Length: 421
Image 1 (cartoon, rainbow, N blue to C red):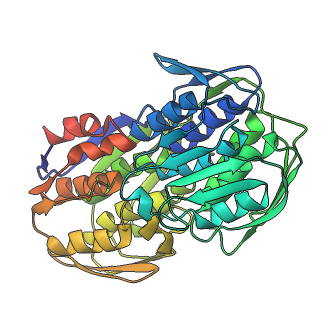
Image 2 (image 1 turned 90 degrees about the horizontal axis):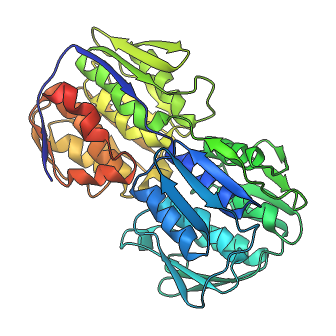
């Protein structure tokens, strides 16, 4: 599917935020591990979360989806699956990593695998920690990378994990920890990447009844005496997906309101709004959403976006139409996403006439006149959505493989239809 974006100016749009992908993944897993029945209200039904649901079903969990909710019959911390169970998580890194630790709760070894790109995304630090906690880990192809077979059991105890490549490694261990045979004392070494996601993980865990004592982002003590309990859980709106509409106001001018967002959310991608404010946009928080307005020139900034990784590409699009250079740092872990997002973003912007240089942990975007062109997002949903927003600002940009947005935001093109017509 190819989508061509017309140039638009002076946007006036109100749109509802889709449910949070991060919260949906974690709520599904906590509910699956819980004692009793849970109802997940307003979940994100996208390709990634459907992969998590399918994997939980293969682990023996009963899941009933319908309307605006999902009902899950919890397994009380013990999965039942046949020998030789394989979970194919395709290109969902969140699914594979979060499920890797809970695979230790199955009655037989479980193999986790995925797409060609998934096999290039590291899980070595997570595997080492699981081995220290009682797991038996075997890599079928390349050491430290999927496919990986996880057996043994989750004994618990003390362990360390390197959080510099991905916070999902620590989140994975934490999600499984309440079901361990002993309490889990997890120390995170290195500077945790995307550390705000650890707040989301801990929040969902405690909402489902887990007891956690923590020292910032360095140490988490998880009790095994307080397991998850079934409950009704409402998924909040997603700031990552909302960023595309906020950027639309910045790039095209006008005003965009996104409803269904929690103004007090711990989602790190809220920080994207602060970046827009620094660049010259007006940001207003209301009871049920956020409005961004802009009319005039955008000014480049220097900013550390390590706490808001999924909005980095969106910010790059805004920076591409600013009047002064922008330097974005703290983004080295983006090379391990669905694509190498640093290299791909720089390459595609330069194809459109941009002046972009990329380093190992930064990207620099300088003012340059942009033109249209054909953008291949390399099957990365966030690349496709961010360049679509730029396309509405410049005109003449076409996105190939545009259906890849279904990974996290199936309604993206419909939400933009009122602007594109």
